[in-house]
Figure (spheres, rainbow, N blue to C red):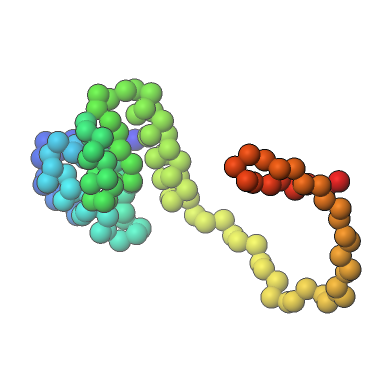
Length: 140
């Protein structure tokens, strides 16, 4: 997988609108430009829409990043195992998106054959009282 690094989020927005990318990673410290980048990525046509990640340092910014368009977040300080897990999930999502859909099985439009209703068997049950005025029933 190849990547491009942009020092400014606005430069990344420009590149994103010209060339398709599979993944966009935005540093939330560059907010509001990072927010603009994520929103721009989210507004691309579905076929060109990349998977988006935001790098955050404050847990309180997670909802803002997700609302702006991030599919997931990476937390600072960057932990290699977290990056590996997150990018592995991203890879799986991208593969599912990029692989052609397999042919779906044909669903029969015919109604199932009619069967007469079966009589219900009565079941004896035994109840046990539980604390907090709950009850549990099970077949005997």
